[in-house]
Length: 414
Image (tube, rainbow, N blue to C red; front, side):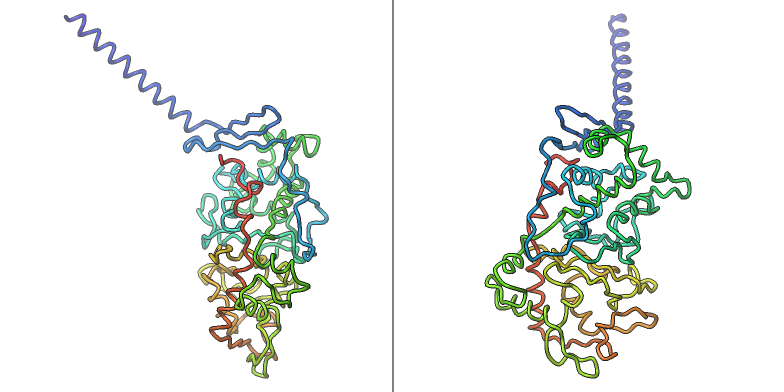
């Protein structure tokens, strides 16, 4: 009996030790498992990107890449700021992988796609976007829809990037955003280039695009810019109407009377009296946000919005605005907060701002178009006019851009 009892004790101890060993081994795997990279049958797969949530990668087949290079563009769209870096399928594909790869942040926690989200027209609903270590950045992320189709080639609200190519690696090197700043003990961009060079799927992708596996900053910029410029939206109610007429001034047959009235107000310039009060005409939106691309005029200055996030301090240099396309979804749902301070929560807020442009002390960069006859603009819009303009702006939202897989996260299973 004693031998049986001792045998049970020994078996229990052995079983307990095995359990502890397995538990420690499992814990170690969760904590230390690296991103595995498997290449087989001409496919690049990123396996186990997030070992805790078991997020797996989807395949990119090099022999059958998505079409980025020859997407249809309406004949009435004539602006193109990407002619110096024409889109190719392979480089835009690399750009897509880079855009969603959290390896591009020092903590492996943030990607470009973390803040520029497909479901929000590649913008962010957060007032301030997520960064590394500090938690957030000091800005919210601009929508990237139709970035290619604009005369304005500068980027960021203060236009500090002269081109989209320059812009693409600036957030990566920002200390708060993605962290490869080289400051305060942080790794620098060279460290990132070496890091990416050790990842097998980039070896394959760069070999196919460039003939070798070398990862450089100009190559990152080229590929990321091609992917961003490939993100286009031309399937809105506006596009359906515009394709059937000679110009924007014609009534669109697919529009309601309200939408056509809003379009007329948007397109036509206002007439002001000596006090800066509108007495007739439209409201002049097209003077700065020019149809059919609805891009921002390159010469536009400050629009009367001053301050930074939460209206702390004064900032009058921000003039860059994204296209008004997909400002809302096709159903009228707003994609994100607006203006560089994020203080506008709906289209009525925006219109009310332009109704009576504030003159703020210290703002010496207010656009002259908002100071008719040297006076602050007063549009004096009626409730009906406001509703009409909102109805028109809602026609600029498409549908395909929110679901097209070629712009989706390749590291997620669909």
